[in-house]
Length: 94
Image (cartoon, rainbow, N blue to C red; front, top):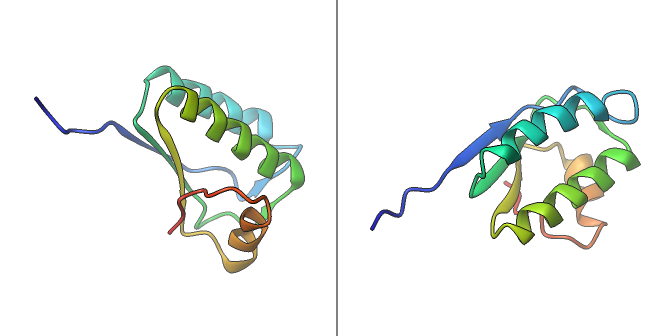
């Protein structure tokens, strides 16, 4: 029995908002089709996350949870981390 986990990393655009969410959603859909155990969203290059971006990350987290998987965000700037914290969700960030 193997403990190997399938981890997929995604880089969203520099601004995750209404104008970019569809493009990012396509990448997420492709990743979800691969049934990852963990989906890592790299926020190090992200300068802005709008409400639609936060809501979308929350929705992706729900989909992954239904599949027994997790969403992890990493390298988010302090203001984006704080915004995600305000949702009351644990985005398992680093």
